[in-house]
Image (cartoon, rainbow, N blue to C red):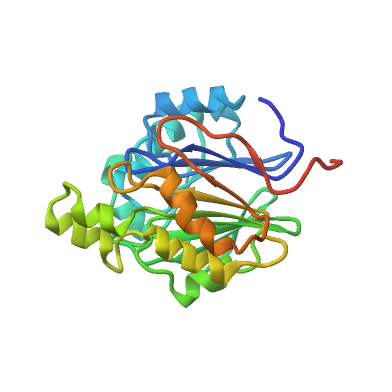
Length: 265
């Protein structure tokens, strides 16, 4: 495994067809969600120099298939601990037997080796959906995808992050004028659906601070959004701050994004 001498994240996939995000320190690698097949996650990890056998944990945010598809397979194949809330576990019986299943509760911090994970409740149509902040030393990243509205709780948890992995799911006009059936359009637009580009931009404008270095837009709809559209809409809210802005894509892994530069370890 290629060892990253920094605090990094790397999107393996982002979107309705599957979500998986690597978070790594010099000594720990975790996978947040495993929404691709086990084989495909292995392939994408290999493409970025990583091995599933070296994963310290898989953390599941909610039970939708685009977040759990490969979790059971990987957990069994490589004996990886899977962290999940009890309600989410009950909602996904297809996960199968997991050799090491560890429950967490939204609102209660837990540790995975040198990482501190703070799960918080979000508004989405799932049993017990969680956003996360992950902290290493003095640096914190925020992970908030699959949320229909940014509550005060969400804003409070995401405040002070050095990097944000933030949903920017759809353009409202593209959604309304697109081919989705009306009930699905209503679900996506609802408080338990997904954030639009404008919603993401508004949330980001409320989270700007001098130590925020990078924002990755995630969970873009392939039919109701375009990367260039999301970047333009959300980018307007950065007010020339110099914060790096990028998009996680569904069909290939992204680059490792360093929260901090190389350090002595």
